[in-house]
Length: 431
Image 1: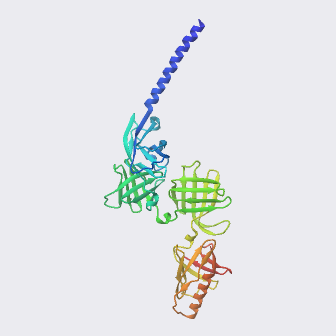
Image 2: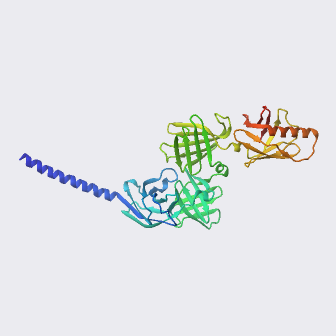
Image 3: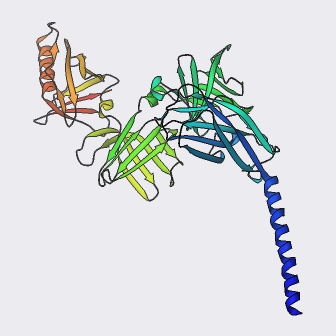
């Protein structure tokens, strides 16, 4: 009898567990939203295997401030196919009522070329299944095809590229395809479905996606863009950093360790800029300060101090191009070899980025070539042949002689440029 009771009890427990499993399965099915379709890649695609298709659902309102990805699925293509079917499953408890979600698709070929969807597809949380059909993917303009315009929109760096009547808006690794439209003022672009709008007016721009307005965008000045590609380095342990608006590459421990930071965010500060990205774990942050920096081993001056922070790794060094310390505005000479200058005379130096130095020597104009590597080398100057007062001609000859003997440069605490000859005599100049 006890044995029969145990069997009956076990039977009812089994029925109960089966019912629970079925109920849980039904609940899971009710909570799931299945998004499906086919990615139709426009243009020629490499026939080699190794390409990938990334499908992601994003919270539109979170795009300007942080990580907007709700769910993402990346599939490797073992062999090329056209179109490429996809399915993406998301659960409703991941989605908020009243929030707009968009579907983005990125196809990357084995040769590095990319395609993204040209229309903005919004996803309804209440749907049980969303079949989007065939979705055309347009090719991404290569970054080198044309110079980009850079904007800071909220906490995001947004890049606008125009090339042969095509306009694309780059936001991290995603690209939105736009076309120019008639505007009463400024330059206005929108997507083919009119859901993405970018309106540039002078140094500001407005960006709207599916009726969601981003924070006002500010154009990054040409002075900042001229810093890129930006390079920095340091010693003990040796490290090298190469940064562009698309990617930051860091090698440290004398090349034994390597890190790539894709699609960095750019923050401008009153004294420099910051590059950072959360694509890496832990966070990589590059702080750049516009302040004279001297290499800790060679003593060579550079225009920026650089600090790197990556988890427990903290590095410091110098960055930028040493040539930038010389080029730009004209230098006005204040002193030649400690003897000053004759009152009301003018001696100048203009360094250009092509290795040419020219200016006014006291009486005549002069020109020469220069090279700045481990030291500063200036060739013998060539001057015009105008004749002036003897004292003025003597000052001019002294300046030109000193100039051809210069071997190194430095800056004093007040920012004055010091050109130093082999025997320690100096030419002092200011801007």
